[in-house]
Length: 113
Image 1 (cartoon, rainbow, N blue to C red):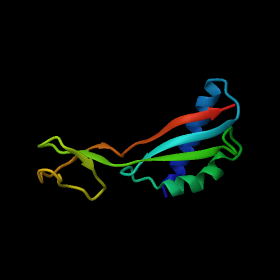
Image 2 (spheres, rainbow, N blue to C red; image 1 turned 180 degrees about the horizontal axis):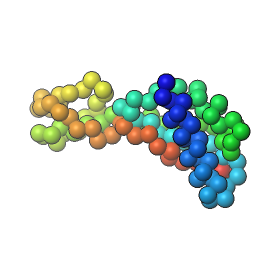
Image 3 (tube, rainbow, N blue to C red; image 1 turned 120 degrees about the horizontal axis):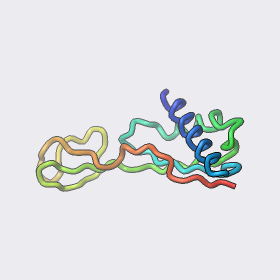
Image 4 (tube, rainbow, N blue to C red; image 1 turned 45 degrees about the vertical axis):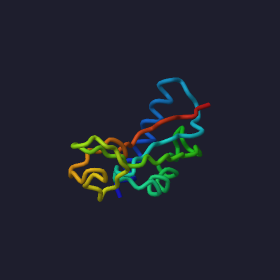
């Protein structure tokens, strides 16, 4: 369960950023997690309370925005929705779709007092 380490990193980054900008208590943190990232949003949510205990994020609301997978065909440049099992272009049948969205894992927004 690598989500524990990922969640700890989210809390560390959010707290460090808040302190750097002179902020106080964090009310909410919004995180984007791509469907192709291999990160399980429910597990991050489960770990958040434990990781944020005793920090500026204790009691903060965690908002997770899921980013759907998107791929581009190397032959016809068509973009289409993909998952971890998509290999062929729906338009021309070429293989080797390039992932253009869905691998994100980032803090999008902090709401701070």
